[in-house]
Amino acid sequence: MGLEQYRAEISRQKQEEILKAALAAFLEFGYARTTIDHVAQQSKVSTATLYKHFPSKADLFGGIMAQVWKTDVIRSTPVPTHLPPRSALTQIGQEYAQLLMSPNIQPLFRVIIAEASRFPELGTELYHRGKEPFLKRLHAYLETQVAINKLEISDIPLASRQFLGMINDIIFWPRFLIIDLEISESDIENVITNAVETFLARYLT
Image 1 (cartoon, one colour):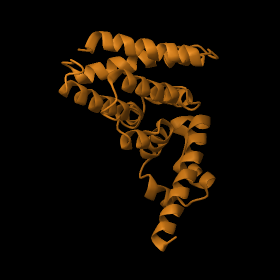
Image 2: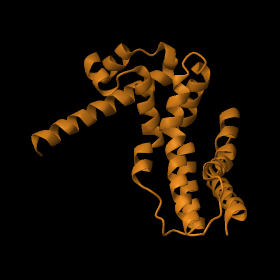
Image 3: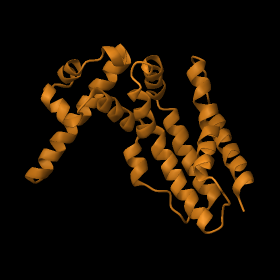
C-alpha cells in the first residue's frame, strides 16, 4: 500500500469512527444536546479532525443519513436500462424496502421530527441524503423507458414519488406509528408486487 492509499484508509477509518460515535450520540441525546466535542471525544479524534471531515453538526447528521441510507451506493449503481420495467421496478422496490426496514431509520426519523422545528436543516439533510438519490435513480431509469416507448409517463417526477410512496406508506409509516408492529418478508414482497403492478397498470404502454 502506497503512502497516499495509507492516508486515505486512515482518513476513511476516522470518518467511520466519527459517524459511529455521532449516531450513538444523536440517538441517545437528540440533535440539540449532542455536541461536536462529545462526538470527537467518543470517536477518539480531535475536534479539528472532526471539523475537517464534517464542517458542521448538520453535515455530521447528513453523513449519518447518507451512511444509513447507503446513498453513495445508490448514486453509483444506476438501474440497468436493459431491464424490463417489471424487473427494474421490483429491484428498486426491494432495495428501497430493505433500507426502510433498517434498524436505525425509525430512531433517526424520531430525532428529526422531534427537533425539525428548531433545526429545519435536519429535514433538508434527510431529503438530500436519503430519499432524493432514490428518486433520481428511479427518474433516470423511467426516462430511458419513456424514450424507447416502454412506458408512457407525462410527469416522471410525480410518477417516481408515486411508486416509492406506495412502498413507504405501508412499510415505513405504520411501523413508525405503532410500536412493535411486525411486517413479515411475505408482507413486504406483497407490497412491492402490488406497487409494481399498480404502477404498470397506469404507465405501461
